[in-house]
Picture 1 (cartoon, rainbow, N blue to C red):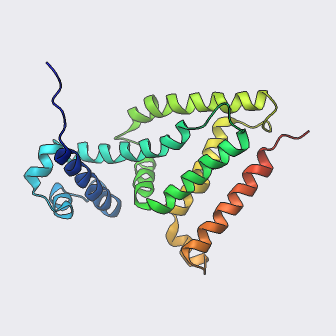
Picture 2: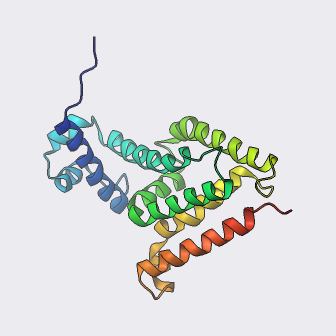
Length: 205
């Protein structure tokens, strides 16, 4: 039996639920958020929300998976045949831009991880692990070909994640310490990160 095709309205409503859920979960956490709150924010009835998602946990996991998928997209585009320094910088810049555009998603993900990843541990172990292992192999090949300074590929990714997501997860702290506007803040962050990556990863000949 053929799988029933999702209509445009169903797709749009599903995304409305996910966007509303991101707002509520990032503000109140999983336990502090109700389906009623999500429905109100989405401008839908509770019954309509539950038509698309069977329970609150399913909405929460879907929001987190959407966040991870968005983060993996620029990692997937890391081109093994490209210039290594350019490829890694493009990835780091994309992650920094995501932190600026979607800070709520980053904070929600951070809270899930701090809690021990109870809802998405399986997803991290399978899909994220497979993607990261593949890209670490690409980075290691660049190192073996003397195109990058010798460095642990996994910890390089950890470094990129931590430095870029800091600008979402700890924005209140940054605002207390930074006097200029957001444009200046992210311009300076981008320049600093690029200098550190390019200088630190360039092969020493």
